[in-house]
Image 1 (cartoon, rainbow, N blue to C red):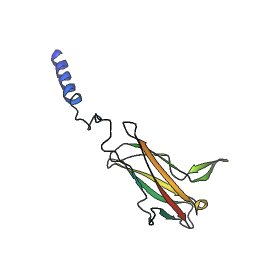
Image 2 (tube, helix red, strand yellow):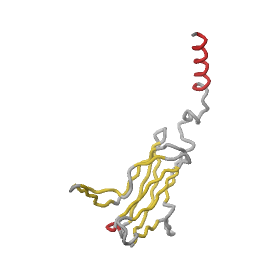
Image 3 (tube, rainbow, N blue to C red):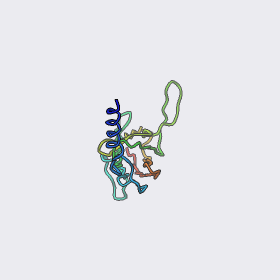
Image 4 (cartoon, rainbow, N blue to C red):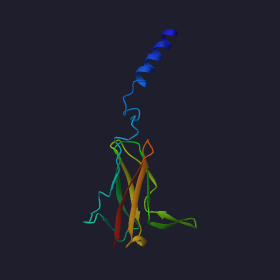
Length: 151
């Protein structure tokens, strides 16, 4: 019994007490060395001012495009918001619904994805999409893009 307890303590010391700084435990300097945030709409064309263009698919109920944010590592929770919404109604209850969902997580490659969906009523509008997260040290990372919704 004592021998098993000693083995357990040694295993705990080896695998818990010997973590490499910044790999399994946060860096000791209080800054995230692998945090980034770059937002893009990879499937849309961009003009010289940096605005993206989404052409509404005439005849479709809704037009979609994919948004991508790079944070540099996996399983980071990101919040998304926009200045554009549409009126969504279910069972006689109507409310404004943003054209992007409010949250996503980054994958093993450090990318987080979100879908943007617009209706015909959004044609002619310019949507600003914001994404952000807080790193383990409380620093807020924010980025935004603009998407012009055309006919």
